[in-house]
Amino acid sequence: MARHELCVAPQGSAIARLIDWIRSCCEADAVADNVAFKLALAVEEAVTNVITHGFLDLPPPHRIAVRLDITAQAVVAEIIDNGRPFDPTAAPGPDLALPLDQRRPGGLGIHLMRHMVDRIEHRRSDGNNLLRLETARG
Image (cartoon, rainbow, N blue to C red; front, top):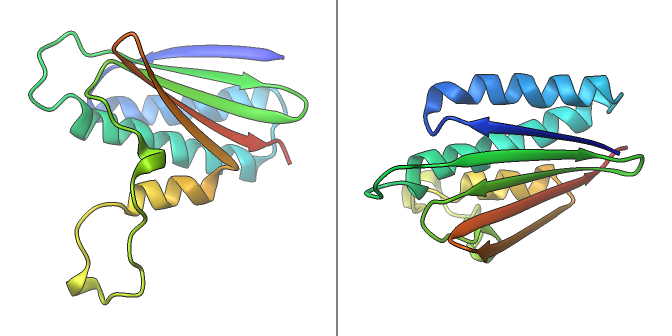
């Protein structure tokens, strides 16, 4: 098993580095490109949500760490942040049947995450959100 960890600056400009890091880790462990792409997209959405909403009106220090575990069967990303409590697994899905002008803003990112990975889990521990995104290696 390969384990990687990256501390992510709590600002939007850090996202490109995060995506490059995920792709590099996956490439080094011969993870299929489509699996790496979907995982990177899900992690990008999760971290962007933390940066945009999780730290709103909270004093620093703001911390985000991403762990990546790559086994023969799966790729697992864990996002750990000290932002406000939020469980994306409990968030309702968007009503995609409504016309765009009648939909409530938001929710599409979580919907996207749910479709990019096989399993999403969340827990709150010691003042941190721990979001686990798992997908089969393919």
